[in-house]
Image (cartoon, rainbow, N blue to C red; front, side, top):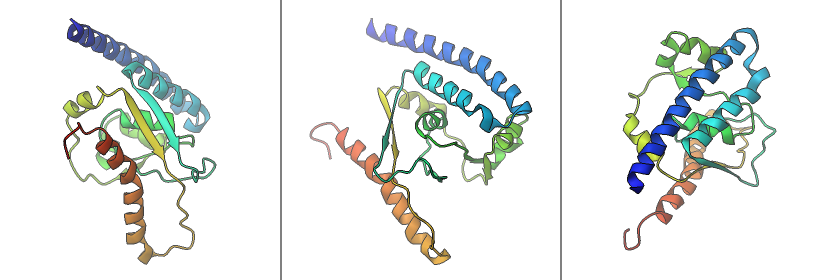
Length: 189
């Protein structure tokens, strides 16, 4: 009986989420046509918070002591599913604009919106993941976003890029690996 309840609850929340999305997004689109999207960022954040709420996910942002929310930053994320951009938008206090697959900018209306909202096109490197992984990922109780300390890049040169990339990779990987290790069943590993 519990499984039936979970399926019904999930179907209900997905239906409400889609309805919410289909009502709120046209309003944001209309506003984007006439206003600079920065002027209604609070509405976009509200949409993302409601999507997180309706998905049943709890979003926790853990800010490192060295995180400076007053600076313009580039956030590196291990984006794996459709909900990630919405969850990140809930957690990151700065105005958020993303890098998006170049092919997305060719999608009618959507591509124009991504450009209008200030996203940056990047070349396609692989095909989009299947929604099956999204389904499994949304089964978790909590989404944690780690906002690490700001890395100063002033004074760095082109030859410093490989070391910087490795440093960023290690910083991002540390809490992910710790989380994966703590979630392993006893006796494994």
